[in-house]
Image (cartoon, rainbow, N blue to C red; front, side, top):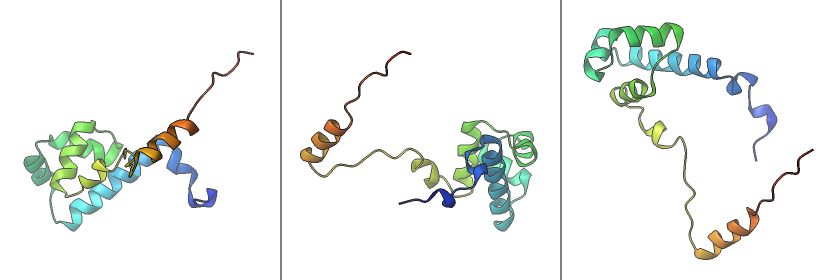
Length: 107
């Protein structure tokens, strides 16, 4: 079970998270010895978009996915929103029973 101390407050801040992702992407690009220009050419993402991502941490999702493919990090996107895998019908039925919701009352 995860402990609240396993998280840093910045993990819940979208700007901070975007900055960390951009920083990791830049580090991976440098480790692979790929220039911004070469990354733009290989990925089809404009050089301006790559520069903006590395400096201002802003990029479209499609461009980020293209960069991740070139930098061999696309598996992480496939794991982003996992769907539960069930081994039996009984598991599904048990989960359905646990998920029965009632509406909240209006104050």
